[in-house]
Amino acid sequence: MTASLAALPPPTAAPLGPARPLRFAALGDSLTEGVGDPVPGGWRGWAALLAGDGPGCEFHNFAASGALTRDVAEEQAPRARAFAPDLASVVVGVNDTLRRSFDIHHVAARLDAVYGDLAAQGAVLLTACLPDPGAMLALPGPLARPLARRQQAVNAVVHALSARYGAAHLHLADRAWVGDRSLWSADRLHPGERGHRLIAASCHALLAERGLAPGAPPSYEPDRPPPGRSAALLWLATAGTAWVARRSTDLLPQLLGLAGAELRHAARGTADHLDLRAAEALSAALAAVSAPPGQGRLARMEG
Image (cartoon, one colour):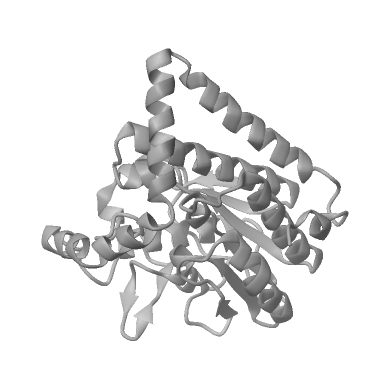
């Protein structure tokens, strides 16, 4: 079951839930942690908005800023399985694309293990594909295209595994979503409150179709005004500079090399070779996780 943000109707009331509270575990990175939606004492975010404040949902957010698929597989997923959720959201992968160690084979194997093990416990999965950070930051083409290929590969894996495990899946890479700057925080990479509320309401609509929507539909209306231009400039001058510096020590040297390859292939008229190489790597990664669920997932995980 999939849906895009633009295609979803306004939220409707959920069917009656089970006698006990629905257990909802959220796994992932800063998006699920709630970065961009500040509240006193920390972050809130779409997952907390979806869970609501009522007694009908027992919510645990295992997500952590900066998490990679490895962190979700090795640290968050065991804790989530111990929680024995009825519903588990797994939204991760952008940070993997921003590392020099990116390998779509490893990403696919980790996600397959996480999805498979949670589904084997009886959890309904909630997943999402994501926009690539190059587009969000409006990087020049030679820098943006390598990141776009990586995120497209991650999204293709998420699409395939979501279908395989019967996940409720939300498309967060739609152009209408990415292009609406009123949905984004000052950092240009995380949703603001409006964006988090839209994600929460959209997920609620998906889950309501399965009778798993926790509580009442989240409101679309924000509690606070969106950040202005001065807030965006302040972030870029302070936290944004630090973010770029941290990524530069890891990704930037490699990204500059990838950009150089883009320019060389463009000059030769062979840019499609780079697309073909990425497509072949993706096909091999998907083939490696094509065994029936429960057979060999952990064996495919790298040490």
